[in-house]
Amino acid sequence: MIRSRNDYAMNFSLDKSIEILSSTPYLLETWLKGLGDEWVTKNEGPETWSPYDVVGHLIHGEKTDWIPRMQIILSDKADKTFEPFDRFAQFTESKGKTLKELIAEFKTLRQKNIQVLLSKNITSEMLDKEGRHPSLGKVTLRQLLSTWVVHDLEHIAQISRVMAKQYENQVGPWSEYLPILKKR
Amino acid sequence: MIRSRNDYAMNFSLDKSIEILSSTPYLLETWLKGLGDEWVTKNEGPETWSPYDVVGHLIHGEKTDWIPRMQIILSDKADKTFEPFDRFAQFTESKGKTLKELIAEFKTLRQKNIQVLLSKNITSEMLDKEGRHPSLGKVTLRQLLSTWVVHDLEHIAQISRVMAKQYENQVGPWSEYLPILKKR
Image (tube, rainbow over all chains, first blue to last red; front, side, top):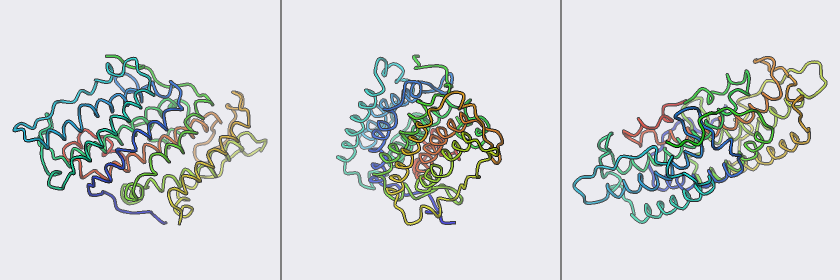
């Protein structure tokens, strides 16, 4: 059997991180633009998010999470504690906006944030600098930027899962072969 | 708190199924074309698949699974048992091909298959027709087509998870907030 690779786990790289970060808005645009409302506005049940909600959450992250926290880490402030992140902001902020508008907004914010990131000329010394997460304590810039990347991938997987579950009752005995239908 | 919807689970619809089925190759192209080899060729450890492997698997499905099985269900054959699906075919079939070539091949096959599907003028009576899965037993055309859709979403989530895990050791204490890193 031929496998492409048997190992996994990469070292952090700013370039590789930006590859993922720049692709996410385009992926969401390509994927979701042709899908009807049922696919993008339904969720997994009470207290869960639809793909529409997820895009709003990603927008709020661009505004208040990744780059603002990077700025705190790289600042000369004595207290480098981050503001807590509001996980429910999208339920008011997305109000009245179409998914297309949200994706366009996310794309603009993300492109701007990548420019800010690049403008810092991040060195490996800078990646070791620390801030304080309100619940998790000490974190480095390297960990913050890695989390930004993984957070995109987490939510892409979530959107996929939420849409898959809309057909949960349609697949019959095949549900056994589709672990995504059992996940949360 | 404003939620987009509180319920979930859609009824089967051929149009809605085709929305997802047609978007998948474009999504993969947009997402993966700008990513370096490390993102797309690494897997989750022994006996797991890389994004590159997954695209090969999707190609094999287009060739031997969904449409051929639909043809069996809609045929007049007495024995409507499907051929077993080879889950490892991509390890030989993808050999020597670039990811770009695989995605282009997948796109062509998928478009062709959607045309075949549309050409059948599927009625709800036809959706109730049955075939026999070699392990699962009796299945309907509706279940087969629903599974085709969910199978795409399953593998999109998988690609996302496999790439997320490349940064598993980079996110530090944030791993607690990233359930994707714990999933299989």
